[in-house]
Image (tube, rainbow, N blue to C red; front, side, top):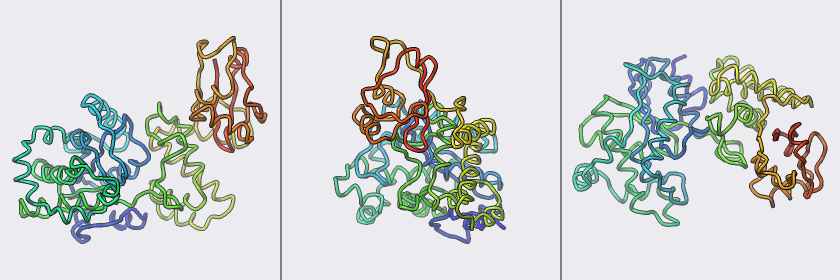
Length: 406
């Protein structure tokens, strides 16, 4: 099976500009391709996961990845998939986020001479002369065609700023620059980036008379059509300081029955033959499939040792054992206590199990909280310093565990 056929079989390909050419390039290791990452946070998250896995697959087949960090485009913000304008960031924040990205990407792709490389579009975008840019780039774009693009439609309802309107031109210019500077002949991205990617191929064709290609990756959606990688408390991060390996494992262990096989097929590197054998699993076998999914992805992101720890802790908790060694934990300080005590609502907020005292109160009153396996029913309950020094385990709902100590 060729690499392209495998990507199709795994359900990863959404749209392509020229299938025959793209097959030839990636199957024969002739693609120098890029994927863009806007540094809107100091960590990559599950939303970036498929792109990173695709880069890993393509590099293993001899293709050369370019990880484009959007230090310049992040100064504007991508309107794709948004109904509101993104928050503006300082240059210092963007530079810090870029450094964090490279460290995390190194777990997936190999950087170095003749291998993968990381570039920052701030290096060429921030010094552009605006009038020259309009003449050389803007003249090649039809406003009518741009307004029809899916990436702008949602923003049009609430008002699309001229700042954001420039994003397509800038992303297209990125592809144009990378083609000239690095021989980059392909761009990959999420399916919501299709219009921006076509803008780049068209700019290269119009300005240079050359062909370049684009392929979009299927968005990771659950059976309800919602993007995966989000929890009630926010994104599922790849940084272990933001989402612990145990929490990361638990997220995948708890995916819906209807989503587990799709996730295994799209995200893991298990052989397709093995996945095909699992395709008809039902009932209790789906729980086994979820454990396989959680283990494989945790191993990819955090390493085998952390995956083993997370799996052992999860199995202990599911079986009712009291193994809390690798459980997410919050350590309180004496300053958090008043008169030697702290209320259960405050503990839940500090542990990130509730966004506010009001939410914590509702969870307790609805019977959704256990403390050391005993149902908490009194929202005015509190814990003493002695109890916290020994450590307490709070269970929220059926699946979320958290240890709190002093």
